[in-house]
Image 1 (cartoon, one colour):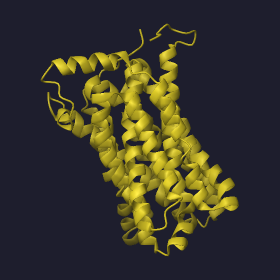
Image 2 (cartoon, rainbow, N blue to C red; image 1 turned 135 degrees about the vertical axis):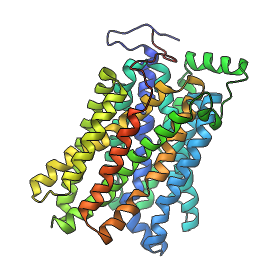
Image 3 (tube, helix red, strand yellow; image 1 turned 180 degrees about the vertical axis):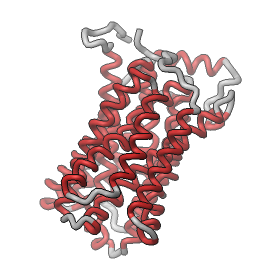
Length: 411
């Protein structure tokens, strides 16, 4: 395996890993997001109500949790590259199959499989990246990978605009099967990290190092696992709460049109991308504890103040600021897990921690709906602010070092 440093500071293997990670997470985001653009048409064609339609998203999240647990341990046991290929193949083929089924029950099964592949792939990609880069680079590299997910959502939107009017929603899902070619490339062309091979061999010789979810709660790791799970839950809660409710809140309470709320969404996504990029740089320079602390406090303040926005300008700029802080932190979870867990259970840790956070945090949309129905927007945003403060207090208790090079491929 070639590991000679290039002029840009990356080895040939690191470039291949970065390309695989960017492509994997970007394509997963594309496949997952296709549903949101054609759900209304599917409700009509299958003759179901909105509750039944909403369950499509629910089973996808359940699949992500299942896939995260299964493929986390598989990636630690059998390798990142092969499991990257398998997870991409699962969500791409399941997405394409949605275009051919005639019953809503079949859609539920296939979207569960989309979730299995997508949820399983997250930890595989983040662990593959952590294996290849030292802690001094993990923050910025994982931020680039997370940003790729935002571009995947944009690709889904463009594809929907071009394909659905001409060929219908089924053709859009068939288009979502194209990442299977990426899976074929990953299977045959992406080698395993030498550090993963070494860690796997050592774990095989050491009977105390078993690859399982239980390892996340052994050797003094329980407090770290619980704290990171709480942080991931808050992160996902903020994302689902803000992105699911704020567009409709803006339309109803601030009297902004649907077109105006779309402009808000674009501004917020731009803020998110910039926040992810800055957070990755900041995490590498000052360490995860201080980077998370800064962004969590800023998120608590920004979200609460945003509830008082009245003018169109304040709504637009405030949305970008909220996106910058509240969702910029998402770029750091793969890196911080990579720093705090050894190579032999790194994929397991990434998948289990973040997918539990995804499953639990997703209920924030329900909580915010309750506060809006019974109280006010200020109370709903205050709820999110309190969650960010709790996460801030949690990160202060983490025992993290600024740089941990264990498992890094670079020399």
